[in-house]
Length: 222
Image 1 (cartoon, rainbow, N blue to C red):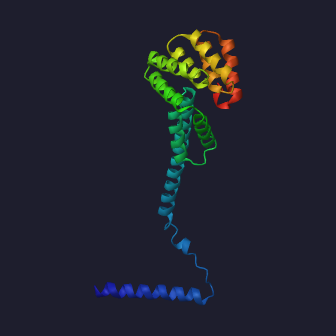
Image 2 (tube, rainbow, N blue to C red):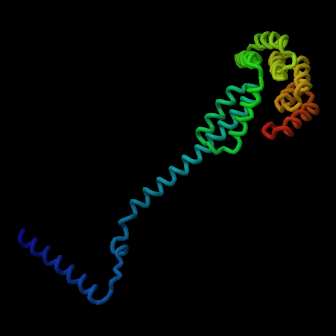
Image 3 (cartoon, rainbow, N blue to C red):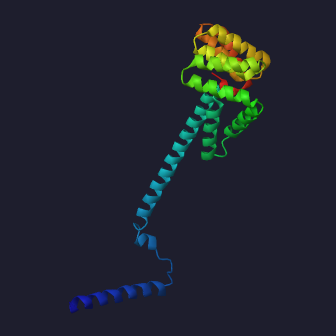
């Protein structure tokens, strides 16, 4: 045991002498990285893994944002403004700087603020009925509301959607034309009219209405 300790002390002295010789020779640039070239490799691997995880998370977030954006557009095209608003709000929580979500949410809020509360309530009830595949219930709600508010373009638009779901394309088109006569700035009315015409095989006419919707709002481009 003493012999081993003595050998260890000799080795330490030799290392110290070697270092002093290097310093004494004026060579102050010691290649420590070369003496221990493997020291940082574990940290580099961990860093690369972390970077890859961050990149994958970023790609997932982008995919999730796009899915939420498309879901909001689908709700809007279906006339379900409340659910479109919910999707947009969720998207803005994820990405407050989304280039289109804020503008579309403001547009929806502005359009609904101009609607009579009674009309808005009727629209909500009718849309809920349509989502439950109950077009007859929606038609009853809408006809009652239109008896009081015959100049409401939004009621006529939803009425057109209800007739379309109920399998009455002619009635759907009549209601949507009435909606457009009251408000020809709604891309949704043109889009729904195009869908109704296409269901009857009138592709050329449908294309014109689809194009009119897209001209007003590029999000309706087919």
